[in-house]
Amino acid sequence: MSDIQSKAWTYKTTTGGFVKNLSLTDYPIPDFKQDHVLIEVFNASLNPGDYKIPDLPFGSCSGGNDDDQRNLYVAQIVLSIHRDPKTLGTLKTIMWVHRDSVYPLPENIPTEHGSGFDMGALTAYQAIVSYANSPSGKVLISGGSGGVGAFCIQVAKTLGLYAIATCSEAGPPLCKEHGADVTLDYKSPTLQDDLRKTQVDLVVDDVGYDPQFHRRSEGFLKPERQFVLVAIMDRDWAGIRSMLVSFFVPAWLGGPSRKRKAIFTRSQLGDYAAVAALAREGKLKVVADSVFSFEHMPKAFERLKSGQAKGKIIVDVSTHATKVNTKRS
Ligand SMILES: NC(=O)c1ccc[n+]([C@@H]2O[C@H](COP(=O)([O-])OP(=O)(O)OC[C@H]3O[C@@H](n4cnc5c(N)ncnc54)[C@H](OP(=O)(O)O)[C@@H]3O)[C@@H](O)[C@H]2O)c1
Image (cartoon, rainbow, N blue to C red; front, side, top):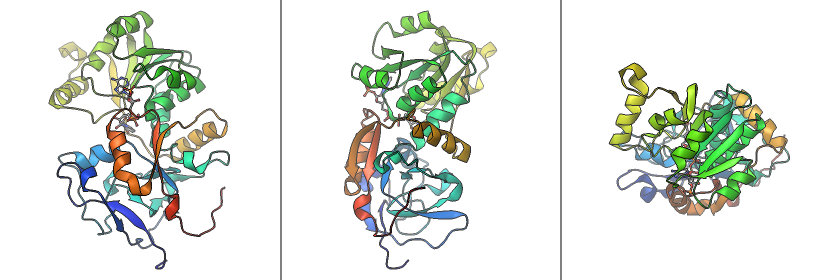
């Protein structure tokens, strides 16, 4: 093991934002961990939580090569995510991952797309399948052109739901390609009226910037139906206040009347298997917004932070691959 080289992007402070503090370092491969699998990363894909969590005022800040696994959250590799956010995954070339968080990549999926079936696909699956209690109902997906939103549309269509996606004027072709039945421009002044006319059975919020969205959903989400909040961290103080009202003030005391559930993606083998099966059947496809080399990680994060990605941002780590022969299941 000792002659294998591993590299990692690490940071020692988050002052000025953690992306500005990233540096590429040699990283020793930690010793064997019980119930973990040693993984070499060929491709990773980024998620907004990867910068939001370290940048939180109370977020973790690691000391670089100290082997405490907290140098970065998170490099999701093929069908794998870190199951425990407290151990904050990592942007490493080689790492240990808990065996319950690894699932074979279907043969027909190219490895460069494999990393795209990570957090985004799993999140969409858990947001839609668990809450779509009306088999032929209508679902509103806020943020249909993003990494999670694109998967939400596809998962909704596999269930036979009628998918309405919001996006900017550039988004409709992509949303339609994924199967959206209708797209609505989120900047349109008639958006609320258009939604009111439609009436939906489920709302999945993959954007989260609008603290009043849950309250306004009373106008278009049928009573007793679920508002599922995926985008949890995009909050200023007004947003946090609104979120607390949504969660803790009952309707009879003035809180929003529609049920709201905030979800945190769970690393569950059964869900991996379901996502892999859909991918194998061609019902879930990855759209790559862009591909960055491992050396250009900060640029990849800048693209992610722009909030304008259309699909997944993929990081190519293959130039660091060792000469170990790889097999696909
Ligand atoms: N709860 C969890 O466990 C969990 C798991 C994964 C992700 N998340 C969260 O889910 C959110 C989405 O993640 P992501 O990977 O999909 O992000 P993303 O790919 O960066 O999302 C970017 C997309 O959002 C669209 N967008 C921006 N503002 C919009 C608005 N007001 N209405 C509709 N669309 C809008 C953009 O479209 P335009 O460029 O056309 O504006 C762009 O296509 C993030 O907040 C992330 O942190 C949470």
